[in-house]
Image 1 (cartoon, one colour):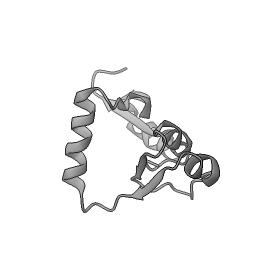
Image 2 (spheres, helix red, strand yellow):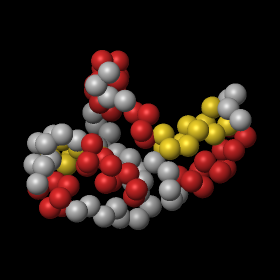
Image 3 (cartoon, helix red, strand yellow):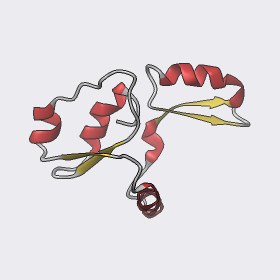
Length: 106
């Protein structure tokens, strides 16, 4: 769920049938999930992440990204310069899944 309520539907839609969804982050409010449509009908296994496999998960993510099987660009909904950091934080509390802050943008 990636810490955003709005991230739950795309997350479950993106996973293949009988795949596994691992959630990280904590939305500010409970995120609604249609269990019948998003989990049962696709046979999805939801799992939580509690930090014990942090390095293993990081390495697996890098392997998937480097192989082209995982493209995280869809997660970044805003790209802002560092000078707009406060705005980025405000967006994270509601509409955004991920905000990329980078020097040189603007």
